[in-house]
Length: 124
Image 1 (cartoon, one colour):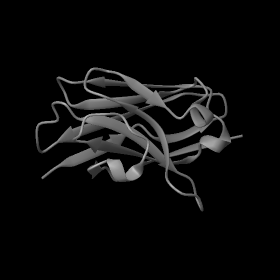
Image 2 (cartoon, one colour):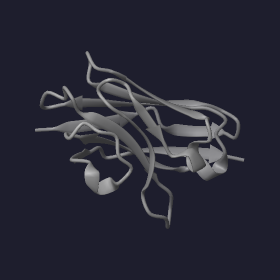
Image 3 (cartoon, rainbow, N blue to C red):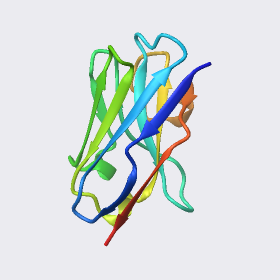
């Protein structure tokens, strides 16, 4: 059974930082691309960042604006999202996703597995 488990969310003040983690288990994730998405109340789930097995990266430039960094540890099947300079507009549930095809894409439909999400709340 494939599981993606996110952690690291919480409440932070504007300007602060958080580091999200996503631990994948249940199968081998060799070659998989991993992504982060987020969904704010009343809005659609949007792409944040993705990373392939070779650590090539893709970001949602409008949303991230150089503040977020995605990384991964292939040995432990873990992907991270370092979020700096957070602002209230970053408040959302953040989801981890895995894509077997291996390439980094922005479309939700391109990902095969999803985690349950972790809440990030940024206060002003």
